[in-house]
Length: 303
Image (cartoon, rainbow, N blue to C red; front, side, top):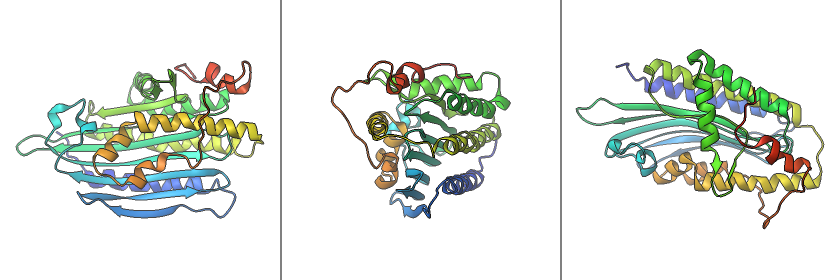
């Protein structure tokens, strides 16, 4: 088998965190900066968390790096792979969530990660995972097309069907069963990736990681200065509730972090600073708010 290079993966992830934070900072109009916390995990490992709050462009943006290890994988990681129970593990990744201030700019999430599980007298089991998705409040079809075209370009060197498979996985994964709706317009999602040689899987993770800011930043630049009303701001806060519901009920990364004894502040940095829930609220038919559900949410071909 190929030699696993943990240092190369870690160095890439740290550089990715640096690059994304630098590019997001350039989209702020004031002197706003990411606050950085480094932390250690008692059971092994630690991380570097960066959070920007109350910016002119980003109400909250968190970009986290973590590298944790331990004697046994948590339940969330072995639910579909029970044969891995009892193995030593290392897990590292970059995870980010961006909640913009302007409701015309979509919320976005991305992560890329690597796991290796080892046991004496047995070959190590490794896999890569990650992806990115977009959660608009007000829909712009050209933004959706750009987002998915960039995702497809990241996948194309690895096979004609890769974008289709990982887009469908994203649509299925970011689905709120209790609401019977998708969280946003999707993107890419992949996990347990080891079907190719190690070097190819690592290259794919890097392609997806690098593509995120290429997909998201042009949308931010195009929409961040658009005017909006107080009613549109209220709708943004209402729709953020869907984001919170998904992360706390379904998200595998959140569950893994909590079950593995990760740093709670870093795990929950994905939650927005402000959010609201309204009892049985429904948008009026024909409004821009109703079009979000009827014309943008759900699995569809944006290319």
